[in-house]
Length: 179
Image (cartoon, rainbow, N blue to C red; front, top):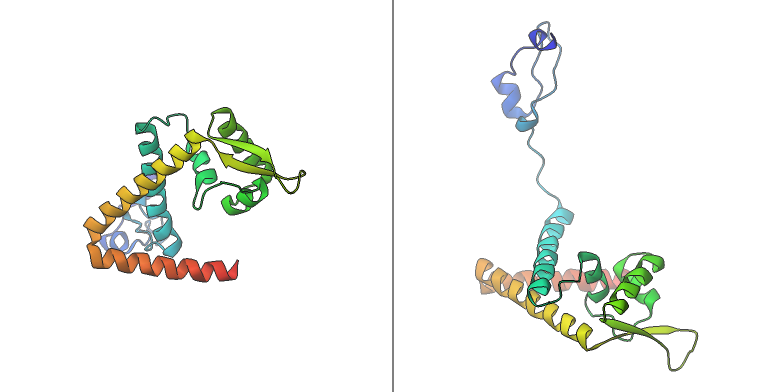
């Protein structure tokens, strides 16, 4: 039986996340519960609140009667919205393939959220236009995100929330210059 060949991890090894030793000095794998991950980097610190906002948007949309929308549809509706945009522009903004975006547009069109129409100046190009239902969904998304912002402002305090917003606007302005 293998377990009889290993000793219990020593306290120092467990606390440091290091390996315990077998009789004879060979190291065993550390206990998974004892391994402490490093602190999250900025990408994770930005992603976690972003995912929370997306979850709240989807739940709020469902509560408001838009139960047919799924998380992938939010990529089409993301700020500043799809109105009068070319599908290729939306795909680039959402960072998905044109094929994936056109699939989502087809679903949203069948569900009554948008239409794809010929461009008035260039008949080779189609542009996305929101229907009344699409405008209502985008309006609901903005209301939901404003609720999230109000919750975060209560949690952080007005001054800290304003500072957070200012920092994010500054980072976004810098990112826009490098795109």
